[in-house]
Amino acid sequence: MLDIPELNARVMEYRHRVFRLETLPVYTVDSDGEDFRRWQTGAPEPTWERKQPWLDFLRDESGSGKIRSRVRIFGEQLTDYERYACEFGYAYNAEAGEQIRVLRRGEHAIPAGLVERDFWTVEDDEVLLMHYDADGRFEAAEVADDPAAYITTRDHAWDAGEPFASWWARHPELLRRSAA
Figure 1 (cartoon, helix red, strand yellow):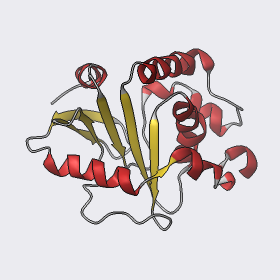
Figure 2 (cartoon, helix red, strand yellow):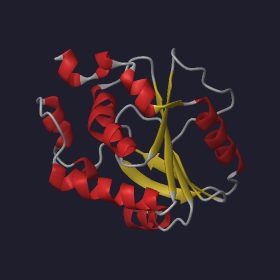
Figure 3 (cartoon, one colour):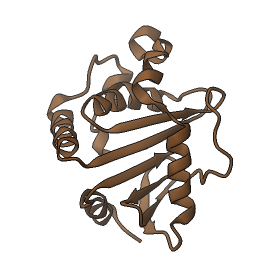
Figure 4 (cartoon, one colour):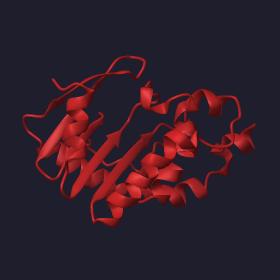
C-alpha cells in the first residue's frame, strides 16, 4: 500500500501521460486548504497563494508536452463539493492545460463495463487504485496486479466524456454564484 508521499512520487514522476478517474461525491483532502469552506460562504475565487503554484505547474507541464488528463463521473445531482471542485478547481485547471472530461449520469451515456472506482494510470502500464473512507478521506493506494481493465476504462471513459469547458459552459445553473 502507498501513502500520500509515495503516491505523489509515482504520479508526479511520469514521463508522458498520467490519467485520473474520479467517482466520489466528496473528497476530504488537505490540498483544498480552506477553499471549500470559503466557497460555501461565498468567496468569489480560490486562495491564490495556494492555487497559483499549481496552475503554474500545470502550464509548465503542458508546455513541455506532458499530458495530464482526468474524467470526472458525476451523478445526476451534483453535491456541493462537486460544484466547488468544478468552480474553484477544474475550471482553472482546464485553462492551465489539464485535459478534463465529464460523464454525468442522466446526461451522458456511461459506457458499459467501466470500472467505476478512483484510480490513476501512469503511462500505459501502471495503475494505482485509490482507497478512501466513507467521508472521502484518502486511506492508501495500491498498484493493480492486472492493469488491463483500468486502461480500457480510461480509454472508454475518455472517448465518451464531454470536454469540461463546453460542459461547464452549458450548465450555468451549477455555478454557486448564480445559484445563491
